[in-house]
Structures are given as C-alpha cells and as structure tokens.
Image 1 (cartoon, rainbow, N blue to C red):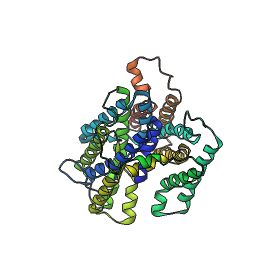
Image 2: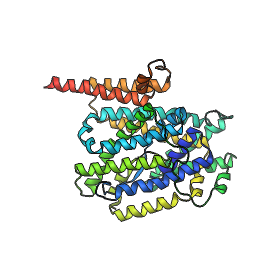
Image 3: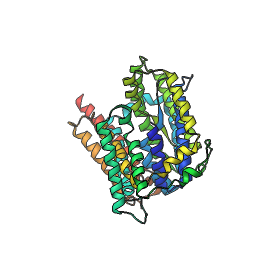
Image 4: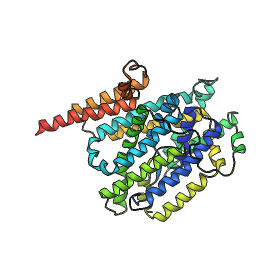
Length: 407
C-alpha cells in the first residue's frame, strides 16, 4: 500500500507538470492522509467506519481523470470535483446497497478497462523521457525504462511474500540507482526539504466546479464503492463478522469523508485496497491494534518531507517503465472483472464493444464532439463518462429485455 501512496502522487504531479517542491508535498500529504482515511474505516463509530482491518489508499482509477482534468481545467476544478464526488458518496451511502444491481461486472469491468486504456499513453510518454523533454525518444531513456520494467518482472517472477508485493517500488528504487550512475538524478530537493510538515488546507488551490469534471469523479467514486463492497464482504468472512446494510453504509460513509478531507488538503480520492484481503488471509492477523500502529506509522512518515522528497528524484523513464506494469494491471483488472460476465450472451459483447469503443474513441480523438451543444458535451468530453453512461444504459435495455424474453 505504501508503494501506491508514493507512486500515485509522483505520477499525478509529473502529469500535471508540478514542481519538485509541490511533488514532495503531494507525496507526504498522501502518506499522511492514507493514515487518516484508514483510521476512519478501522474505527467503528456509531455512523462511520466498518470496524474491519481495512486499509485505504488513493485509487488508481482516479489517476487518469486527475491528470486529464487538472491539465485541461486546472487544479481548482480537479479538487472541487473530487470534493463533490466524496459528498455524493456520503449522500448515497444509505441507498447504494439497493442499487448495486445497476452495476454488474459487464458495466464495472468495461469502466475499469476504459480507465486502464486511457492511462497507457501517459506511460509511453514517460518511457520516451516525458512529453516536451529535449531528449524525448533518446535511446538512453528507452533503455532505462525497459531495464526498470525487466527488473520489476524479474522480482515479481522469482520472489514471494512481502518482496513480491513491493516489486514495483523496488523497481523504481533500483532503476533510480542505475539512473544515478548515468547522471540522470539530482538530490537537491532532498537536501532542501525540511524535517516536519503538516497537511495544509488548500495548499495549491481552492475549489471550482465544472459539471463534466464532477461527473467524471462521481463515476470514479461509484466504481470505488463497488470494489469496496467486495472487500468488505471478503474481510467480514475472514474475520467471522456478518456484514449487514448498516456496516456497508458506515464503510461507504468513511470512504466519502476520506475523499472530502483529502480534497481540502489537495490530496487524492481514497478507496479500500483489496490487497489487504490476501494479507489478512495469509498472515491470520485480524487485530485492529495492528492497524492502529500502521496508522501511526503513516502519520509519522507523512509528516517528514525528506521522505516525500526522495520520491521526486525518480527520472521520468524509470517512472515510465513502472507505469507500464502498473497501468497495465488496471487494464488487466478490468478484464478480470469482465471475466465473470456471460460472454455467451451477444448483448453483453455489444455492451462491452460500444462502451469501450466510445470511451477509447473520445480519449484518442477528444475533439470529435467539440461542436455539440455544451450541455451534451458534459457527457462526451470524457471517455470515462461517456463509456460508463453507454454501459449502464445498454445494460438496462439489453439485459432487462433478455430477462423479459426469458420469462
């Protein structure tokens, strides 16, 4: 989880063209807020928190929307949309369990697949050295990126347990060491960084609101809620706790509050990490005391900017090599979600084809619907939004029609 807490802010900061100082803040505040968000979920209050060994971290499905919206509309619009999405999660938490049937695997799998596809071009730019770089496409950049990727794959293949789980983080570290010998690393930001920092409200910007951006992050929030539901049930089963409707509401509410809090200190949207299910199952450790110690560690690490500054020295080709494996996993996870879909039904194939096709089309040709009225472009400016809407509507039409026929 710590790897995600470091990698996500690096990628988002690089994609938005933020300075090393801003990147240091993002990494530190993300680690800190992961601790806050996890506490909200582990602590079993009257209304907030599911009370299970749940870990919250930044959702990878938010990376592409953050970069896209931040570049096109600015940080204020991006953070405003994140805040509203968290508020929506809070408001719909009592009702979400009743409408989850509107989001079967054919819908959620299509959405996550679209998100994964939109991330891949970002990785390719970094492999070449970063968009706009003077040495873009230089053989040195490409070699370093693929060496980093190979290191990650070797670690992933030949190790187990903890080392296996942090293959991407180790790949970044080893790739950066190699880059240092190639004269591509500077430690200036680490030496200049301070020893203490706290989350600062509206560090980079306040909030501005744009409907298309809000809609995008609401979709990301709903996808996260669906993923979290599965984690809640899995951990409940491991911990011998029956998960009821009130538990789900409390869990969703904790996530929504975490997203809202994160946006106010210019951090990220937070969601339940599924990797923790395997860790609890393998280790047998279910104690909330262990989780509270982990929360404390995150709060301490997130308060030391020098730790965050270490993340800013990673060269862009090294990031690109790691991104390919990481973003590819998002895409692969979408395909995995689609795996539980009934592919014998032509209707499901058509839902996937149209939603993914239109989502990818808007991503690669963003000006395709530029001349449509503005109230329509709210739904067509983002491939993720358009793909999700198409998947939901087609699922309601085709699969409901199929049920009628079966009757």
